[in-house]
Length: 209
Image (tube, rainbow, N blue to C red; front, side, top):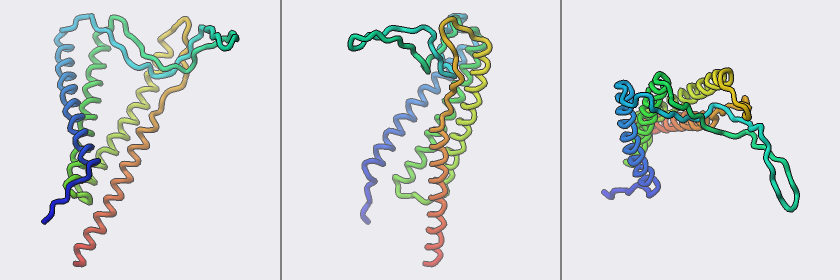
């Protein structure tokens, strides 16, 4: 019996997936150690937390642009930025550490489920219940991440907009919605239903033989 070699693209995806899984495992292990050190007061009060700001900002200060002999007034608008908590308080650092660990564990689980799916397809087992369950899990978790992220960004925006004040910056109400994440989840869900239909056809063909 001749063994059919999987296509190069599938082998590359499997190889890349293994690398990502390995790197994520190392980073997750580092996050676990980091959280342990946080709760043993290893870092004292020397933490300098920098994280993405949940909304776009406008800079009030105008600048000058010299172009083709013209002098133009310009202003930076709709800029994305990061916020630096100088000498970050301990209670903020611990919350961020736990949140980071939960995110990493979730992503690690997603990559693991995708690896199972790719490995099955590589072996030629496409229309299987295992593949359908893996895709459904990935879709559910992605939707959950989208809901959590959207809610978190809005809560963080309302909190920071009420309590953070700058002299030359205006915080806008443009909050990212991460629609791409929801689109990927729906695509994977549709793919799971396609495999489900294929599995039913396969089972019906086996019964007629």
